[in-house]
Image (cartoon, rainbow, N blue to C red):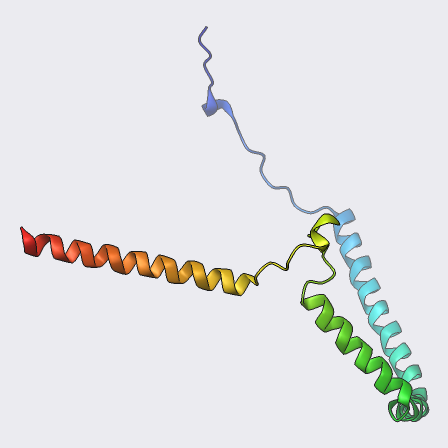
Length: 136
């Protein structure tokens, strides 16, 4: 079977001018934007009246909390939990039978060993390649 497509008959529609309805919607949208700006300005002005007293109360509360032993205790615990989480102790990669097994070497140590053995093999290979042309 042979299918033929005639793309020459396809025509695109010409863009039509925006109707009055679209113009009215745009005017309403711009009017609503101006109303939003006015509402935001009113809210900011109302909140700025109470701003100095709010800042005074918050700074007093924060000063009292910063000087207390609770703050030092919480800060220390946050630091310890952050370090513990970064060390990977929360992940349960080991099974219950592996708890009694000796600890595995660190990833950094394994990477170091792998890099040094690859480097040694590469040096050995390069030295062998350099010797072969001189012997021939």
